[in-house]
Length: 324
Ligand SMILES: Nc1ncnc2c1ncn2[C@@H]1O[C@H](COP(=O)(O)OP(=O)(O)O)[C@@H](O)[C@H]1O
Ligand SMILES: [Mg+2]
Image (cartoon, rainbow, N blue to C red; front, top):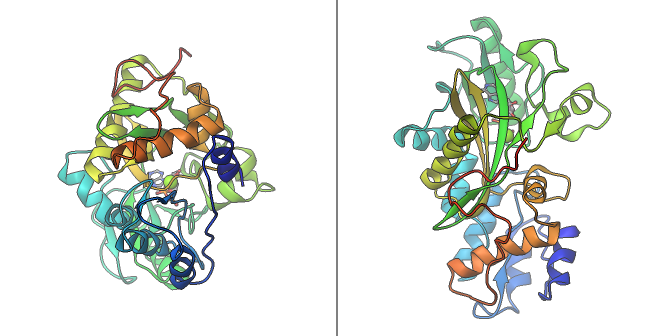
């Protein structure tokens, strides 16, 4: 795995601790380690088919007294439940689409159509397909019923925000930096209601959606728009309490950046959004992974090495985007 190789290439001693079935696997694997000398690089967004299990992993690591990279168990749990995360955003005055949660396929949706129906606590576009965007109450309740039955969780229904979609990778702790912004290019999708990242567009290379949703980083934006979008991501990072690194997904419409999703353990596989944004900012893959670790070590006062931060903007809290 590239992440492990990258850290090894920087001289760290690393032991992969894969968790497949249960938390006991992890408890056993951690037993030989000391909390004083071992630091956990958490790269788990669920196991045994459960997204929520990501919280349990971090909770166990924390309860055993180990320090780790990335957000706390509490923050991971907050992000996994999209309705809770949205309540937090609203409390901080951050724009997010108006929404309602449905625990059953009944009731009246109060906001505007079109709407999008998603599982309330999943990620990776699980449960997101061409049928997710609905335009009538009948369609909405049918889709809510499907999500509840198929994914065994409540459905989150929110206003569908047209416009452009951006993904903002952010890292740091006391001082935050937004990496160059990525845009998902939907120009090849003619139907405006199909301009969404479906499960296929993320995971199924043979599909139309996968082949017709290219990304562009740095996104073409006027400096003031870039600032507005980056600022929404930075505010989100602080409001949610993310640590070390994270990614915020945004739909931008009528000059307003609407936060639609918070990725507290963003994908770090080499061709994914976060590493790509870091690459555009001048970080090799190994630089990027080490930088995340260094943020975490510094936060915990484990100062082994100084953070690199060589190519970041000298102005903190600004998107560091090279000219388009
Ligand atoms: N309110 C919305 N308006 C428009 N598109 C949305 C909205 N919510 C989600 N989407 C689309 O669906 C995709 C997946 O939704 P998201 O909430 O990011 O779920 P996941 O956690 O599975 O990534 C987004 O990348 C976006 O394309
Ligand atoms: Mg998302």
